[in-house]
Amino acid sequence: MDVIIQSLGFKHSANLEAYINEKLGKLTPSDNIIRANVTLFQGPDRATPNDYCEIRLEVPGPDLFVKEQSEQFEQAVDECINKLQGILRKQKEKMVDSHRRAGAQ
Image 1 (cartoon, rainbow, N blue to C red):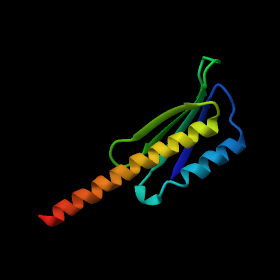
Image 2 (cartoon, helix red, strand yellow):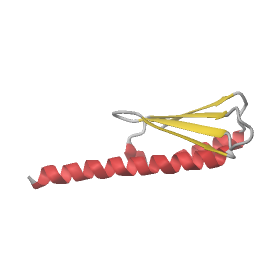
Image 3 (tube, rainbow, N blue to C red):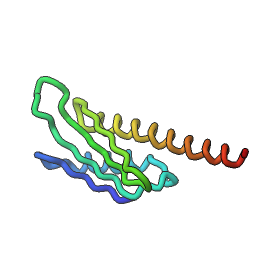
């Protein structure tokens, strides 16, 4: 899987890049992920948690997209990965269920 990390308005650290790559590596290879586009940016409001992470997974079929905001980029990345794991799990269950139904008929 290719990983493209973009940070808008600031330069991300090597530690943050390694953290993102580690977390994305936890997504299973059987999910047929072609590429992960990660965009990090800070929102305009300083009073609220304003570190944003967007992850777009390029997979066969429609791409998967999640966006989260948190006080730190690492937390936003964790929340995005958790959402993506849930989405991928649901897709896999649907596929397995449809194969079972087709085989039962």
